[in-house]
Length: 276
Image (cartoon, rainbow, N blue to C red; front, side, top):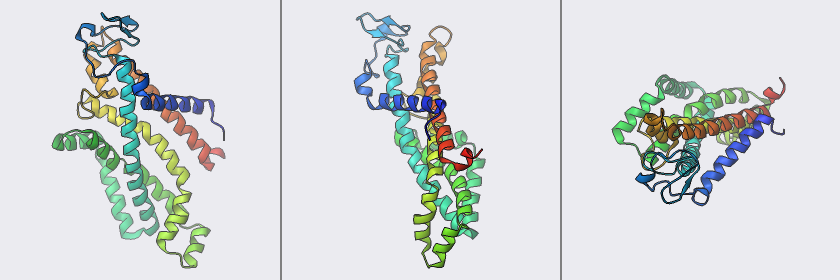
């Protein structure tokens, strides 16, 4: 199924973001950490005292805003690329096994899922990060471990349907072990569903990372993060609007692109969507 116009837009945005993150040392015009107080808060399309051109202007410490946004894409995508597989493995493992074995184990997994869903993520994250301190690794593990519920709940429901299908019943009848049934029959039939969930989870994780950085408990300065840049630019919104507006636009575009791409994958890979 070929991408829809919105799917193309999402794909292009995500490809550009990934390329910008991967090629940040090559395409960024300046070092995102180098400060030049003499060039602080320069507007877009301006020159500094040394003749340097700043397409998107500079921030409160004279750092080039475009360079920091490019490197911020690397940080956000790296966090998402590391956290989402952790959530995927945990959620899929618990969801598949709970849906297949059911009984007491299923009840334990579902009650654990209910408890986590009942706790607001921000409050849980604040409590953990205040207790152990924020770091790059901590943020990835926090987002990865707490994100499993999205996969566990949906995969469990899919497996509950698949376990009654003829191919699973036939495999059980010929003596196939539970592990073989799960690995050879159930997991391959959830692959398209998992692809959709992953594509939609990536922008969600980026939003959560930016929210934590905005609150000062995510990626720590001077490492550029879109959420941190938004937080730093709040006090300059009235006069030096570009300090906060451009990182906000970058975050909004990438999240929009991820959601558009996820919507297209959902329509392309889910037969129930195509039949409507």
